[in-house]
Every structure is written in structure tokens, then in C-alpha cells.
Amino acid sequence: MTKRKLFIFIIIIVNIGFLWSIFNMFYYKKASFDTSKKANIISNNISGIHNGNGGWIWNESQFDFYKEYSFSLNKNEISDFCKITNTANAKYVENNRPNKWVEIYIIEKNGDDIIITLKQNNEDGVYFEFENYTFEGKGLEKYIYKHLKKN
Image (cartoon, rainbow, N blue to C red):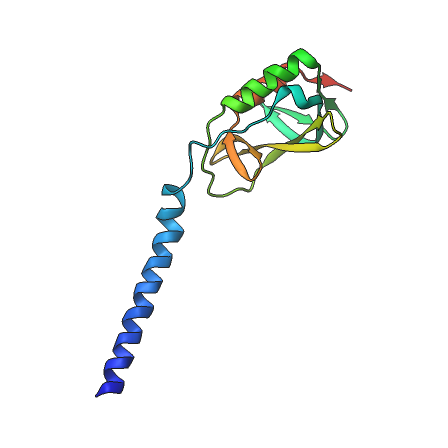
């Protein structure tokens, strides 16, 4: 009889573990996401910002950052860029597979590079990724669009 009770106890524990993993997979991950997180980019430490590779769609127009389009920001534009990124709210993105993206390289005065990836997909809209966190990217998208240049 004790073996039967032990077997039933193990089955109950396994089922509770399974239910806990399902709960974590579908609900807890989103509920525990830290929405108070902010990107902290200090404009005094930055010497330049320019685009990397990528592609983008804006108002049904395609922008190819590999060859056709580019942008770079001067000192005044860098401070505006940092204000936009630092005030963006954290955004939970379940599926981090973008349809389009653009890499943005931030060059610090000490020579280090910081990469921000502006991403776009159908489910989550526009967001950017910085230090393994995702933030709302609509303001950054509009700011970059104003500074685009055709090569």
C-alpha cells in the first residue's frame, strides 16, 4: 500500500509542477515584466550616432539602409535623440521576431559602441531594443524619419 501512495504522491507533484510551468509560460512572464525600466543614455558621453544595416517600411515606402538611405546626427540632434530614448516606456514583446529592423550605432567619446535596434512587426508595432529590454519606439521612428538622407 505504501508504494501505491508514493506513486500517487509523485503523480500529484508532477501535475502541480506542470501547471506551474504553464502558468509561468503564459501569464507570469508578462505580469512580472518591469515596466518602470528606462533606457539611460547620457548625451554628454556621445560623439556620434549613425545608422547600421537594416530595412524599414514607413507610410508604405521601403527604406533600404544597406545601400540607399542613411542618417547621422550632430550634437544638438544627439541630445534630442537621447531625450526620446530616455523617456520611452518599457514595452513587453512576446515574439521578438521583427519584420523590419534598423541598427543604430551610438559612438561614445571613449570609443565604445552602443547598439540600439529599432524593430517593427505586425503584432507589436514599433519598438526598440536596448540592453536586452524593449521600449516603445514610435517617437524614435518619427525622429529618424525626419533625418533620413538618400545616398
